Amino acid sequence: MADQAFVTLATNDSYARGAMVLGKSLRNHNTSKKLVALIGPHVSEPCQCVLKRIYDEVRVVNVLDSGDTAHLAMMKRPDLGVTFTKLHCWTLTHYSKCVFMDADTLVLSNIDELFEREELSAAPDPGWPDCFNSGVFVFRPSNETYGKLLQYCTEHGSFDGGDQGVLNGFFNTWATADITKHLPFIYNLSSIAIYTYLPAFKQAENMSDFETMTLSYLETGNQPAPTAERYGGNAKVVHFLGKTKPWSYTFDPKARQFSGSVHEASAHPTFLLDWWTLYSSVVVPLLREQYGDQPFDSGCVEGESSSSLGPQLSSEERKQKWEQGQADYMGQDSFDNIKRKLDSFLK
Ligand SMILES: [Mn+2]
Image (cartoon, rainbow, N blue to C red; front, side, top):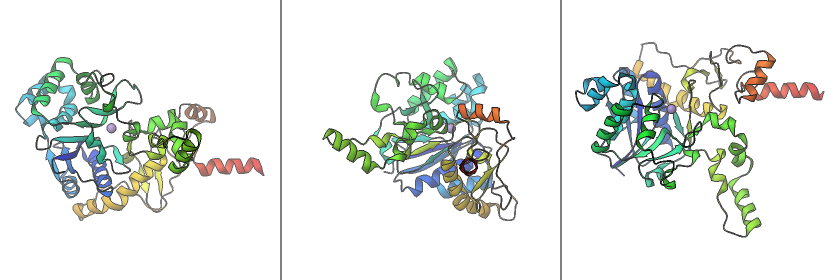
């Protein structure tokens, strides 16, 4: 439908790359919706050009230039600059309904069914499930709501310093009023949650949908319940929450390995690999075209050895990291290394 759109936001070139990958992932899964990117004034010319090739609409948002209520709000709360830029999505009134997605999300299957939901629908935040996570949400553009949101911002600020605090403060009945506004977690699966509740994530990896449904049918005689749908194997959107983003790494496309001075693994390696595969195969060629002879850092390296992430830790420190769910899955604690260790015991 022409009056519905996915919307994202990029305030710098790093997030712009995230937006490029997100846009491509939506297109690859044949979305029928329009794609809109809101960008800050600091996104470079070549990145803007690439975004325009992927998105139907690229809109530069400069709250400081706007000279309207947003500008006034910004003068009162300069700390909420990026938040005001994000709230700008409510002004896209040529669409009747939109789904906002952070530029650090990646789509793994078609999610157009989200447009059947109402404002404000979102998934629980993994850190505080009575709040929704503002990385993916359904909303209805409206100048009236936009005005109220700005007013709310200036009067109450944000309890977490960002848009999630503002939006949870404003849409404060989300937790209790209407369960249909709670999106299943698979629409905003954060890497953190994978490690804090690994059995749930694995629930659908271990059993195929068919097996799960057959089992449930045999046990109950009822119509098969799609239990597997809510678990990790059916993840539809991955959210790379936290400080370490996919673009914080460097990647060797040939060896399919990551490297970089990153102190915490940010995501399940499978999803990180999905992100980089899409980025290096589809986005980098577009960037290369735009930059021409100008050198640019794609984040891709070739042929360098890249086995370890971050500094080497003592075995006690590593144990602690494991217990906190921060195993170095791509370096020291990679499957190959663990297997080598086991093999040495089994000899
Ligand atoms: Mn995010």
